[in-house]
Amino acid sequence: MKVFAAILLYSILFYGCGEHKSDFISLKRNSGFYRIVTQGNGVFAKENQYILYSLLFIDNKGKVFLDKRQSEQLLKEQVKKDSFSMQNISPVSELLQMLAVGDSAILKIPLKEDEKVKDLTDSDSLIFYVRIFDIINEEQVLEYLSSQFKNNYEQNTKYNKTYREARTLLSKTLVSISNGEWKSRKKKTPQGIEYYILKNGIGDNVRRRQKVKFDFIGMVSSNQKEFDNSYLKTDDVEIIAGNKVEIQGWDEALSVMNESMIAVFFIPSVMAYGKDGKGAIPPDSDLIYLIQLNDILN
Image 1 (cartoon, rainbow, N blue to C red):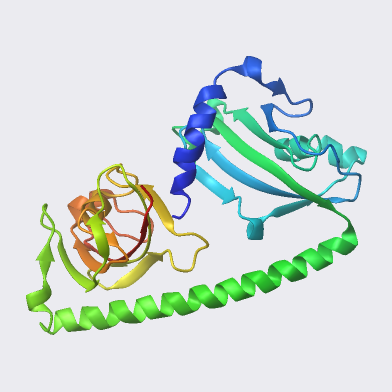
Image 2 (image 1 turned 60 degrees about the vertical axis):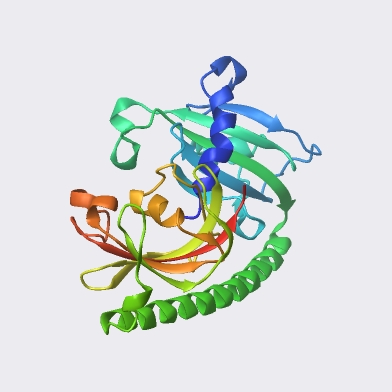
């Protein structure tokens, strides 16, 4: 849920170049076309060395499948140039071996009709944006993994603490509402969504088309079972308010919030996932969201 910003950030880039194959070069071993975006220092990986790289994987509609662009999330791949490895090399791996440190490139893979399954039914092509950060040897890999483990441990400890605090706050609030203790604090949005302010914010309310960052915990109202939360993920949720990125209820909720505000919203099914439901959310489910608005970016 924390990768919505990639849709806006890269849609402009891909829109300008994604449909012009003359700007792209064909891969030699796989179907697909690539284009160098930036060039680095010219140092290429040798066999058995490891490439450290970032990756953004989307489709031509801007749907994000994987976002590994943060320094603590770098991917690694060992270069193998034996005949078996080269025969079975993937399109992304083929591209990586053609890039030097500091290089970034776009890889576009057109989809055939029989490949448009599951989440790809509306997709025409897959797009990968890669950037090479470093090339390291086997000894350096152990050092890198140790450092990565330490960073992940520290971040997870921080995220877990923040999540526990938010989850406790939500649980206590729901008990108070159920007991009627907060009856006088009930408010309604312009379209009738019931909500309770847990912490007042500062400044003006969010306006349509503003970019916002927030965290949330989502529950199914009928059983108060949590189906998702953003507190245990690397980044805040980042969306354009009023842009119908997820559900109508989010847009409505954000419209009555300002920076640093925390509130609980009771969103009816018709303003959530409706009769279809989604994943762990059954059809026709009313939802409860704790939303913490962290920043209004513009």
